[in-house]
Length: 140
Image (tube, rainbow, N blue to C red):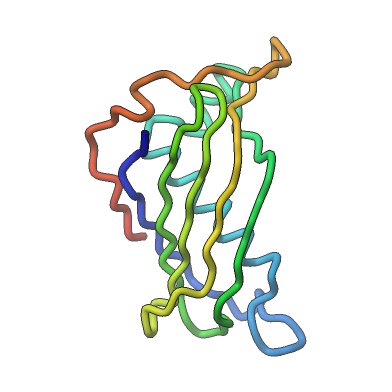
C-alpha cells in the first residue's frame, strides 16, 4: 500500500554551504527529515499528536543516492510518500529536485517504524494512514 505523494518546498540557505561551495551531505538528510515530518503532519500525525500518544517515527535504515550538487541561492522540492511493508514497518520514499532546473539531486529510501515509547515496542500503523483520501500537495 502507498500513500499519496506530498511535496515540500524548502530554501537552500547560505549557511548550509560547505567548504566546497555546495550543500553538505548532512543538509540533504535535514531536507529529507523536514519533508518527512511535514508529510506525516498532513496525514494527521503532527508532532503534538505523536507526543500526546507517546509515539514517534524511528528510522531503521537510510539509503541516499546523491545525484547532483545543490548550492545557494536555490530551493528544493522534496516529494515524499510512504509504502507499507507490514502494519509495523514502512518505507519512506523521497526524491529531491532542484527548483531552478527540476533536476533530481537526491533519491532516498528509508526503512522506518513508529515506536510506542511507553510500551517500548513498535506501534501498529492504523489503516487510515494508507486510506487517507486527502491531497498531500503542500508547496511551502
